[in-house]
Structures are given as C-alpha cells and as structure tokens.
Length: 300
Image (cartoon, rainbow, N blue to C red; front, top):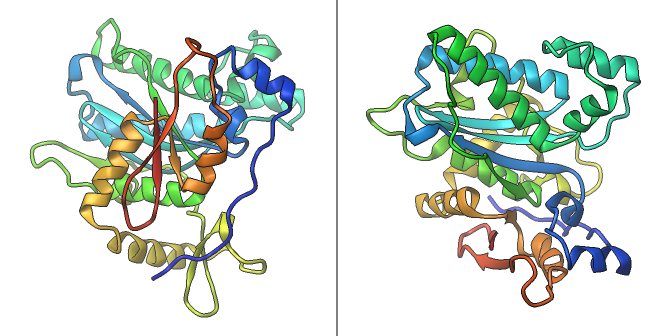
C-alpha cells in the first residue's frame, strides 16, 4: 500500500512577527498554524501505579465529559498504570455565542461565577484542557480514596503533529506498541471492555482512491470523500501492518521526547524560521527517523 499526494501550504509570518519570535520562546501553534493536534502525556508522581480497570473507566468518562465541553477531537489514547497519552486536537478559536460558551462550561461542572474571558481562554488552549483534566481527576481520585496530595509529576509534555501522516503514525504507536505483561494497558482499540461510556473518537484522516491507493486527508486529491468507520478501520489496520516494529519505536521516541513530528516538508520551512540571536532561547533541529514513511522528529 503506497500513499501519494501533495505537500501542505506553509504558514507565513511577517517581518515584525519574526522579529518578535527571535526574542521570545517559540509558540508552536503560531509557527505551525491550525489545526493544532498534539500527543500529550502525563506521568504520576514517582511512577506510582494509579490506573487499574476501575480508575481507567473513571478517567475515560472524565475525558469524554471534558472533551464534549471543550469541543475537542480525540483520535486515540494509551493508558498505562503510571500515566497516559492522548492524541488530541483542541479548538483554538471560539465561534459560539457567550451564552453557549457558558453552557459548555457548566456542562462539566464549571462555576457560573467564572468570568467569561477566563472561560474562553481555557477553552481555546491546550493548557486549559490539560489543566482541567488533571485537576478534576486528582480531586475526584483523592475523594474516592480519601487521600490528599498531588497525583501528577511536574507538567505534562506535548508533541505537535505537523500533518496527518504524523497523526496516523502516532495512533499506530499508541495502540500497537507491545503491552507490558504485568501491567494493565488500555488503548482506544480496547476501550469497549474498559468503560461503559467510551470516548467519542474522531475518525482517522484517511482517504481511498479509485485505484485502491490510500491518502491522508491533507494530501488527498480533490473529490475523495471521507470513508465509513468500517472502511477507515480496515484501511488503518492495513496501514499499521506495514509499519515495522523498529519504526514504531522511533515514533515513540520522537513523540515522548520531541517538540514536533511530521513529514520533512511539513517541518523544514517552519524550522528554518527558528534562526536565533546567539544566547536567546533553544535551537530546534530536525532529525530524520530513517523510517519507511519518511517522517522526522524535532528536538531541542
């Protein structure tokens, strides 16, 4: 099976914006442009085992409640006893009325007294989603177990997915990497046996051409329509079967330690904008993963 298509357009910055960016931390969502899709991960304090079947069910139910309120998209996940990965696309711009925004806030238990600007800021940032998720679960877990204290180790990590091929590879890694023999692991593929209320997963961005060739949505020729769920699942299974285990391991390294992940043409123009004045910020470099899909990671 062989993917085909055309590269994405680039996100341009004015000279003034570039001047600002050379003197402040680089914001990935501004450099890459929408949509803003990430693999986010969080670990428990001192790698304490936290998620068994029951706690995983509570956690998935909470994710779905918050996902609906934030109008976020979740493409896949992996939950281990000591942490989790979510493949998440958040909405960076609100188009709802103020009244509807407040209803969304209150649908997940938010206070009606919270100022509207604060609600909008939280709804349109990845940090807002993660803060809500981690704080809510910590509070509920401590209440269930009559405990106090922090559950999570430091901040969450996030790796930006620069294109749809990186998104597919990320879901493949999250769901297909070997499961520890002595540890419970839940993925979106096995969620039906974990929770009665599964997460409403967003269909994967796959398209099928008349000749049987597959395409990612961002590189598909005009006129190809989205596939039905069964077709997407079958095509994705074929896609995963064509990825060698060593490539999945490379994807895991890039996702867990990198700044961004995607095709070279999705990343190279962006990284070329990150030239820095000496001593300011951190350098960013593209590392070829040497895999069959031709993906790259960005570290630094």
